Amino acid sequence: MPERSDPPDFEHRPVMVAEVVDALQGAPPGTVLDATVGGGGHAEAILEARPDLSVVGLDLDDLAFAASERRLARFGERATLHRAHFADLGKCLDGRTVEGLSGFLFDLGVSSPQLDCAERGFSYRHPGPLDMRMDRRQELTAAQVVNETEERELAGILVRNADERFAHRIARAVVARRPISNTLELAEIVRSAIPAAVRRTGGHPAKRTFQAIRIEVNRELDRLAGALDEAIDRLVPGGRGAVLSYHSGEDRLVKDRFSHAATGGCTCPPRLPCACGAQPTAMARRRSVRPSTVDVEANSRAKSARLRVVERL
Ligand SMILES: C[S@@+](CC[C@H](N)C(=O)[O-])C[C@H]1O[C@@H](n2cnc3c(N)ncnc32)[C@H](O)[C@@H]1O
Image 1 (cartoon, rainbow, N blue to C red):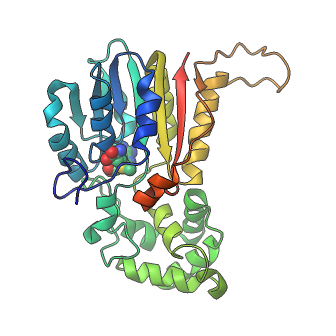
Image 2: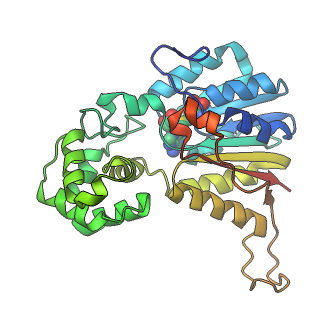
Image 3: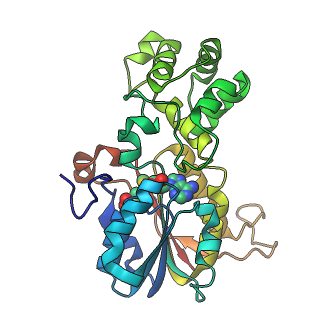
């Protein structure tokens, strides 16, 4: 059963809701950007907890957009939604947040309905086309990445986006078996490409490959750094930014942009006073936070989550 007012066709259980709301508790009144609004679960919790905040929500996915529209309708003008890439946050915000952002949230990765719906092609467990597009208006699909990328580049994608240690074996096997037409075929090729002993340990052998291809299709990492920098720049003093990431590549990037803001991009040798004139713009609120065991028990997708919070100086 959906938890609260989830629309019937989009049931995503948001991760670490209490921690996200808590992170934004100290933010000044105003506008919060929810850069990946999904089904609107976090946005709803923020709007309920803080009547002095409004939310601008973005999502690339048509179904997520429609679901959050329905879920947040009761907040009237306090919730505004755009079907947009978070890299275009400036276009969505300009003209309405003259005084900047009170807060932002990036809840990265996929939503449950994207994974659960076989036709979307995100899942190695369900038979479906090699699609994996969050924005179904875009041309590039997983089929093109899988069937048209040169072997060395394909291996690079698997390393870059998922730290896959058998990247070269998998890329070789994929290239040898092309054209590959569906998700289960790809999952089986990946499974048979990795050593038998490894197949029996850890999670599903194709998990990392699917993650890496999804990230490539949706250009999830290459536009994230710029979007985070811009969101931090747009925070008002005391404004808070929260990011939930779900794998090490994402988290490394988030940590890097937060520390760039905290040092102002200072290039001076460590332990020497800064002489390059860099100005810190924000500080990390605390170390990253992992979900509680209660959260993980209630929602297995929370398992890999990591929350980082930044405060604008
Ligand atoms: C983990 S879900 C967010 C769930 C949301 N916090 C909630 O409470 O329902 C991630 C969402 O981000 C969206 N998304 C992924 N990359 C995006 C991007 N570059 N720009 C905008 N939305 C994106 C996905 O379509 C998905 O709906």
